[in-house]
Image: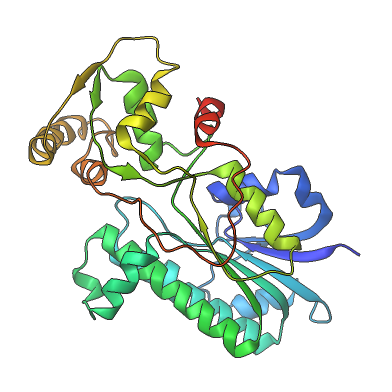
Length: 314
């Protein structure tokens, strides 16, 4: 008998990648998503008051389930309410319903984020969530989500694996991701930013390899899912430039100047595009080092090198 896996957030970027992977055929999967267009097995919002009734029509309470939790909100400009509802309240409601139904959970794999490191600091400072920027709300909500799940798993004696990826990229990545915007900007802009700031990245194929291994392994714990070596923005652009057909101009500008330029750019191109490539929010991230993170107790296997990953996705 195939192992049953419940996948939440199955219509997302990572969910689609996992479901389309041939290795998924080893399992009997049940997809859960609030997006009806993706035709999930269970169409429901995790915040729904009817969640228990809907789950009871599909889940077999006599068998063990593994849960792959991908459900979360992440966009550059999401509201505080969206992050609170989708990353915190939805998680609380989902786990409460699992308890109420007495679902047998064999293992729980949660896709967290490296954003939790800053999120934990915000929680410890007891900041006001409603006054935070969109980015900091994401950090706070993902850190809170991880803590909620960790406490729940410990209380119920459930094997928990927490995977903390950084900026996920691939050939078919959504156009609204920051690394997607960087690739687009580097390929088609005559300007290259000479930023020495190091950026951690996660290649989706390496990430899915580690997720599938987690689904079959008896090991559990925390995994820092980032590619090594961690490279700087200019080195990332150099890998992208290998496929570029047009000449580029290398410029050295400080953060304040680039933000001023990007503010003007955003105001002009914002008239035509809802999410311009070159925004102050992304410029801030060009200058924010994300090289140092605490390693977990599970090894992240990097089957494809970062350089080859970029070649594969360009």
